Length: 131
Ligand code: THU
Image 1 (cartoon, rainbow, N blue to C red):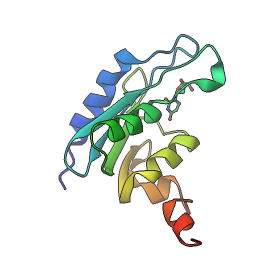
Image 2: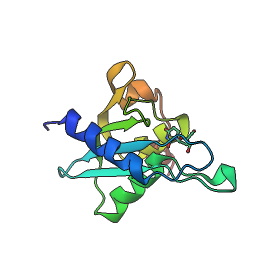
Image 3: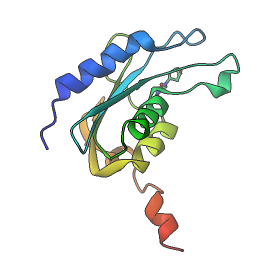
Image 4: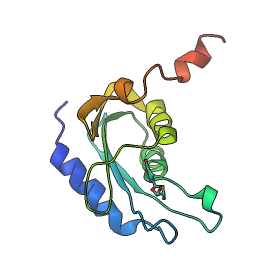
């Protein structure tokens, strides 16, 4: 599948303006290509109860489910300068749940697979293994 990384990054960057970040002042935009070719995206949404803040990736996976499901083929997230950032640890797990095997991530070290970004991941297959 062809991945238009520049378009993905542009969609992630466009999401920055929707971020709700009155506490950290650190907007994050995320975008991903889905198996059926559509692009899903999200931004971070914080909360006065700080620990309840939602990362951009939370919005992205919610957008994925709400617009028809599928699996993620390629992912990117950016900060307010439009620079590539790494998904936080929790969000790597969120993304893993919905990733195709070998999903690609644009990282600070270039394009990496989800397995490089989250090695030896725990996932749905581990649950199936003991059913
Ligand atoms: N943040 C994300 O949205 N995604 C990440 O992967 C890294 C961190 C958000 C959470 C918080 O709203 C702000 O960035 C500062 O940590």
